[in-house]
Length: 444
Image (cartoon, rainbow, N blue to C red; front, side, top):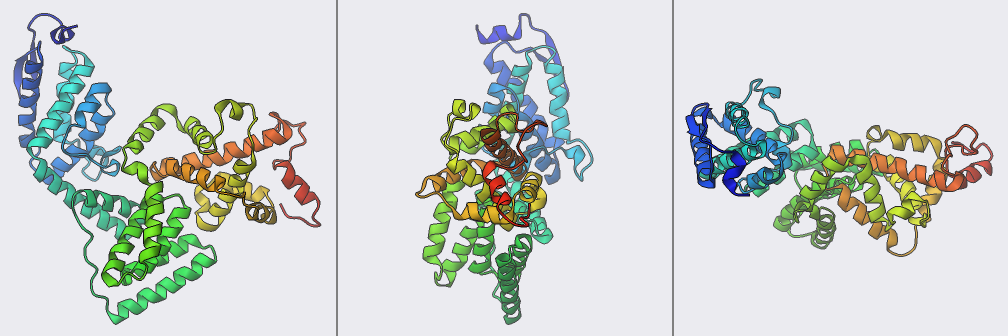
């Protein structure tokens, strides 16, 4: 099929807002000519930095979710936005409280063009408009991105939102902004930083992890030095927030390099490990996983992560015919990590299981770590997958995985109808039932 035939015959005139009438395109050159005219209108519709930032965020978000070639064409733009910059952003739903004029213009163009050519071709044309505009004003638009990223980063720091601040710091790093040098600490600042750090360590040892993270964050604000960054990173790693942990470790290394490399070997080792777990951010896999999640759904993706991580064939999973040793250990190890290092309020399934299982039974299971590196390898694969997603998706996947693993173990012990009224299953695996039955006054 020749390119022109996609548009139909004849030379129908199309009336486009701010451009006027144009011939319906019948060749690639005419298609590009219309895109160039539309791109030339945008500067007059986007006179302020705010207008330009919201246009970038919203139009990029719309285009990468478009069909096929339009999304591919949009990625030819010299500006590659981070997910935090664009995902779900809509000007009218923000503090602006009004549609972005550039986005509204292109929406009107699409409505008119769709009457004359296929919707896919209209999307492709709008992608080319975006590429032309961002290519022509690349430096100015990146300057606006830097300004907004710094603004959002500083707001997150002020509000104590470590995770979000880390994501905005990654944007700034890609835009060539180095972290501001730490101010020379005053004796008062150093003393306060050390006091908060010690309190953070006390909270961490007592497994009050939310409190510990807050204290480490406040310690950093009072006196930036490697120790609170490293300790906060360790807690974030336990929460499968490896990308944020990696940013903390890199900042700790930057400070340590400046101050004599007291922690050089430890930081190099921990950065290497965190980099491996967060590698999907830099090798292009993360974008594919995120796109697949939208299509496949969380439940199916969660099961697939379990099977890939623990080397379980799908048929083995479906028929309960796999060796459960590593998976069973993972269930109780993950519950132990969540109760000690995470926020239980985010994991209702974990809270329910922790209420069901005797605490001593969980301790006993965790103490019986499988020999060799098999579990460490499986856990690393799982965390590599999980930390590729934003926190909301990661939480949902991890929660569903807990539920599905536990359900599978119950099925292996009591059959697929373990939750029926006439089942002998009491909601916990057979080994746990025996453990509780042998204890006098055993708690559940």
